[in-house]
Length: 545
Picture 1 (cartoon, helix red, strand yellow):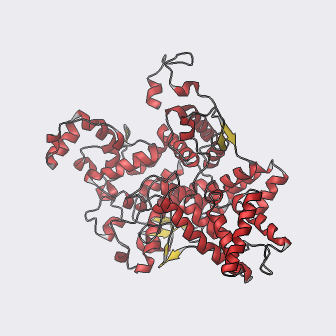
Picture 2 (cartoon, rainbow, N blue to C red):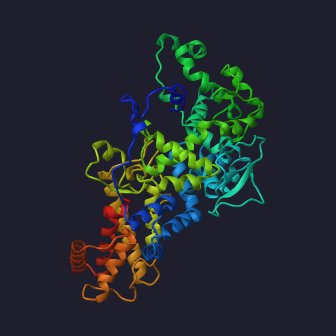
Picture 3 (cartoon, helix red, strand yellow):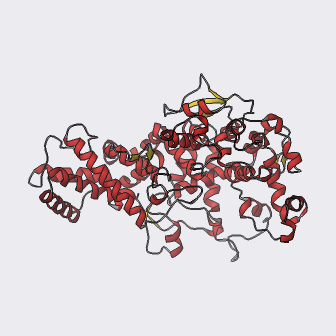
């Protein structure tokens, strides 16, 4: 996009019929969300949980409170958790497969899930730490620290760093590697480079760095060459260095790969080799790749220069804007989005490259706040604009726990956040080795998982509330209310408000009342209330937003 503009002086204009569509883009034909539903969307996107009844009441009493609540969400400790979930998904770091296994560090089977989540969490939590503390975005590639928990501090060469503001989650702390690696934020993250571990010439890491930090995907570039030149390793390396088709990618990829050879392990099955940075191998890429270290044409004379060089690249800021925009709008950006991205990047730069300025600008757009489409909307608008979004597995698990106190686990595995013994991809999530894009539409497997989750969570919450020890999802817990009680309708109303941020319509009230009676006749009033809550948790108004 930037290259096109650089070459387009004197090119198409607004009056030119050949101008690209973004040159004459018009506002999207959308119907805005109600204030209540907008608050629900903001809370889920920025905190991963539903707004409280008190927050909804504040907004209803004064619509001007929306901006105040938005600012509070960005300061909420749960915002950091949400950012960690978002970037772990975007960067595809939460995998079930690593080159080194948990038992090689002395951990037992019941610690496997927590250990894998720790490894996956390190780079995403560093990004989240920078975002939640409103530090300049450059710090994700220039920081002299990382974020670690006890499992990582025990496994890798690192130590807790005193005197720093700590993450909001007390299980994680600011730490520093002790093996002599230079500062570089996520560029020096063992967790990131275990996810993208070394291929021939360390190129998997170079490709990942370019894709995650500059939104440049070498794997999507078309290439055409004579296949006989790749029949053996020597011929392949010769083609990489000399074939023009190969060089169109490798001239940019190989210098980045060479800059990361300190992570090159002599034995990829050795915990020590894979966990330790090797300064003595930093120049190995010059021999193996035939390329001096660099970043898109900018030479790097010491690995410690890599972070500042990345941060100075215009693609770095543009990629941050693209990343946040795609995650919050729930779609890929296209050429038509050029004016939008330019405006958002302007807000980002004016805000000193702080995530809060960028997020605030994105959630103020008409598209983010769309709750429906106007009659003049086209099929393309329907395809592009997400007027309703599915909760991610993380959002669903966190919201259910917030409401009911229930967390679906089995043998130490969170059932919604892994695929070894869980249902992450079946609930629309991402598993880097199988599915690399979150699900957009509803399907059968998602419905089945949600059904079981809703039933278990509803029973847990109702039994707890009626025993006086629950999460308070049911307000009238002094006794079991029946449709004959005046408080019955009040209970239904507050449930709809709490779960869906909307008033209960007459038809829904009638259906829920009939469900209560039918279940109570077959069981008891506790079962009846559990059924009512479960149905409301399965309602699209709950798991979409």
